[in-house]
Length: 255
Image 1 (tube, one colour):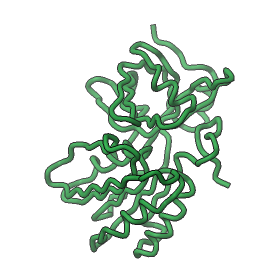
Image 2 (cartoon, helix red, strand yellow):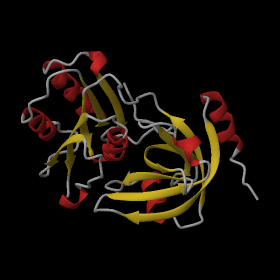
Image 3 (cartoon, helix red, strand yellow):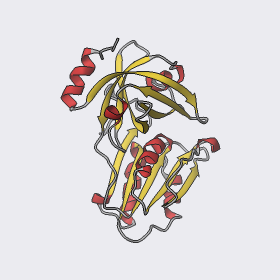
Image 4 (tube, one colour):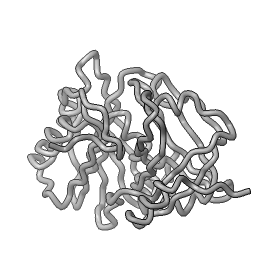
């Protein structure tokens, strides 16, 4: 029997021009100290959209209220009808608790695809800068780059085993820089700024994708502008904001 999503999910999906599906958990495993991989099955290709898109998960918070959390899609396996999420677990919240407790066969309402940031098809090189919460999105975007091309990753982590890698086409030029946070506050941009300053950006046309903490991204955007990138060459997406839980719709405050 095919399960129907909650009526609120159906109404929201219609309003957003997206799909609402009940998806089942096929696995939930820890990949590192702070990353958990959750695989979901059910109309995965439709829900996952293209590289850069995310999905909205309907969950319950600690007060029993329905809330939604958004996660970038790490990967899609059309043959297995599965999508993969990489969820960071270095904090507490309904999404983290769900990812940690998810069991094979559990079901969850999913709305997707969501998001407006996709790969710039005109760029010769792509710069991905952010914290661990962005790594899954970065890898899916980079794996969609047409070769020859170039992907540059500058990602801040707290633990050595969180520096997860991914396979790429041998014809794609890949540079990966993992920055150790070294105990700095997670809204301190110092580490990522140092990583960015240590790297000479390639010539030709480039595009920067800045994903992660709200305050850090504002500073990073100014830094890449100083390196010669125009606003049209910068895609910025705040996944979270220090000191503030994401809103019920899954996104951080922007004010």
